[in-house]
Length: 156
Image (tube, rainbow, N blue to C red):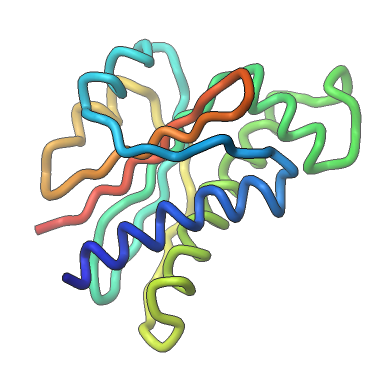
């Protein structure tokens, strides 16, 4: 029951953080099967992952297309896309997954303490090899033209 409540909080947080902090209107957020997730990525992609522990332990993993990440970075930093460096994009993606995870725990129960790790860049092949340990829920958030994924993995 509590895990389901945490996953519902994660779904709400994805839209809330992207719309409020990154000014990205979300059309809808759906739970998708791992096969849809795996089919949308390639081995060269960089993901961002942050671990957490507390009442539950696990990870949040952000998968976002490069062009959408560039757009959101420029918007978040109040600049233009041409001035964005790869380091700006990586740091913005880290901040994005950190905000989603933190907001999830606040929505879940602001009286329960969770420890967030430091968001890290991981390569697709490493992230996919690490999956399958515990319960995973994959959310796909649709914007007007693009989509991104957030995988929430809870350890057993």
